[in-house]
Length: 458
Image 1 (cartoon, rainbow, N blue to C red):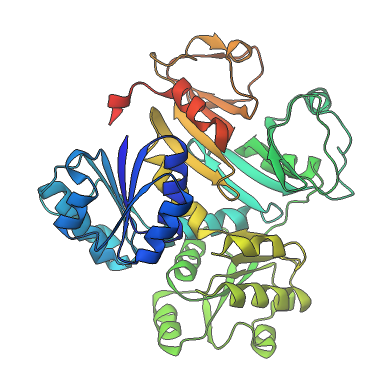
Image 2: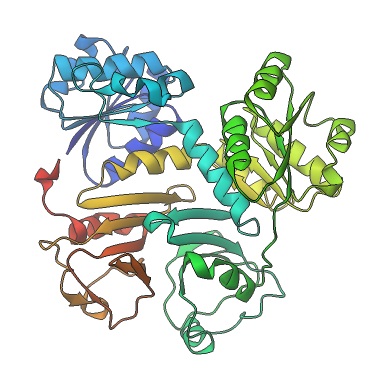
């Protein structure tokens, strides 16, 4: 597949890395020659320096025979015009645009993206994706990572194992005997900075970070089995009143089980806008790292703090300060993946990586086959792929133990007739089933081969 990626920032670079690693023909475009050079020096991609919305630049990038264009520059308007030019001049089949401004995303203006207006096939909103990720973290606060699958009927949980975890040093195959009714499978283990898909004889040790795929009704039980207690969130402090903080507060206000929310926003004008937009949330104007302001927000009585400003270091320091003041749970927004290793030493319980959420959203619309959802784990080390099994798929009609999955691949769940099942080796995959597969990055091309209908799917 020939893909043009416009924007060589974190998101564009990550998409280019993954697609080029899967032997796609990738060209990256950016008006910063240094970013283009970084991409071409480190990745197997071609590069063009110039404005992505200019027709001559797109032509130079090979738009006339491109299968897809991904517009992920820092400008919404450039992304929109790029898709328009790609459609009108080069007849590119599939166009994806990253758009941040909430005004462009208002449902009242949805007709804007009709083919005869702005021909964008998929609109990705980073702020909305990050807000949803934040709500998922809050729903399972003792997990460091979460993602919903199968229409909310299943969930991926990232759990850090402590010394008091009751199932340490137990072969995974025995967990099926000990907890026969638990609809959960350990699909990934990170140990000593290495992520792998475990086999049934592997044991778990203190310090491991595991990824568990579980039925939504068994989330709390799974957390308890792996040494975590489910905590009810009744009081929350949000630091950052931008689009992400505002979206989270609005979502919490709509819930029937009311959560008392206090928001801290440094910019006065933005704080006033947030106060006007929210009904029950108390908005405080000031610095989220100010201990006096945190105490005014009753941080010591809060169940959790969510720090989502646009500065990574502010987010981490505010989270640390809140923990030192008595808040039991801190979740921080962190853009820079090199800072993630500091989370544990700083006692920050969970983090949200906007790049990973945006990359996951874009990849969902790129994969071959009937892919319904996709989630990128870590620094693009693995993915969980949810897809529908078609009659032409090599796995249709076969038992899982008969399928030649690579070593880095595990099936986490199967959904048939809207019922989520815990798979075993004897589970037969049928046409129409929805399956969730954990795959290490190196094995994704083979998973795609097992799932895909044909390259003509697009």
